[in-house]
Length: 453
Image (cartoon, rainbow, N blue to C red; front, side):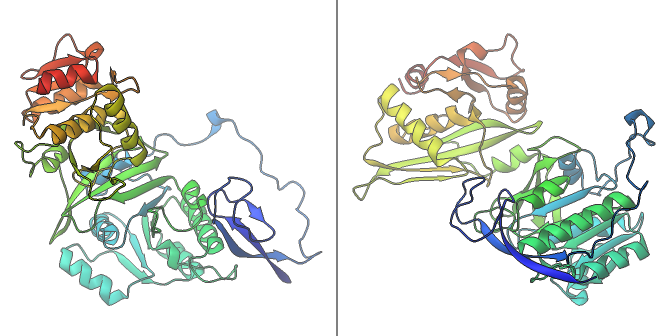
């Protein structure tokens, strides 16, 4: 069958096709997201008509065979927690993160553990067989897993059909290419087509497939956005690769809850799960320092206590700086405006630096009260107390609003030895956890009056 090729420009965000390159995608409005892609298509008259009677017939859901599928324990309790109880057979998992953060290390540990229970195929497109073996020896993991160093998708699928693994790991998807498409490995068309064929293999064979994805400068997984839509689960490594701990977050999970996190510590034996992340994040804090406040965040179904550090210093230039790490910069600007308008604290001539300790990303508004308390503490240069936790959302009127699942947050704070909790006045529970005193405040003025007089 003769094959012709054509070029199109596809948006990496929404997948829309364009006949020529342009700066902005007409479908989603994003800028600089159009990438050229070469598409192979059959010549005219080459396609054979579909055979009659071969069309698939719909089936009632009640008539589908099978029931609840048993999950495969990965050997890591933290990883199983993020996945929702283990690896689902026939699923496809995408693991992303910055170079050197521990993606290959974690997956090689999983491969070594599961190889003692069944066939595991580890496909390496970036390292040689000797390099993979040296890493396995350094980590002390089992060497029963099958290893394949290849980048051709057809070779990978042929080997997988031959060994019939219960788990196949592809490191990484950007190094794999198929001969059905033109273009180098890693371009938009190759990544999408290879991921689609690996997904079809997972669904047809029942083997779980885990692929590693590179990340861009912006922190997203490289390649088309449709890559994340194809897979069943997306796991992101967050935080700094230079830290001794790693945070793994589920941003998509068809078989469990999203936004669950797992915390690992990097050791000589690889990544080891941390049973109590709150204790890890609060281990090195200075309770007597100003500009430090503790809050309780809900990461999925797990309450985690984190430290928020703020520093307000006299600006050395005309325009003050606003630097936030682990916190939305626009949210910080909003809270600074509320402090100026509703609490009388002006930061117009001050540089403001905000940091969420531990490499976590604070996305929910429950940490607003800790942020404003840390900012005020830095201005007044008075510590907030080492046994106080701040949980609440701050509105534009300076009011303190309640947040969800307060009882679980307070229970976590009580277990770690905190004795005072500042929350919204309408959210004070009738019965607080043992050992902790809940203080209700209605506004920022009320909070600062009771903290600083």
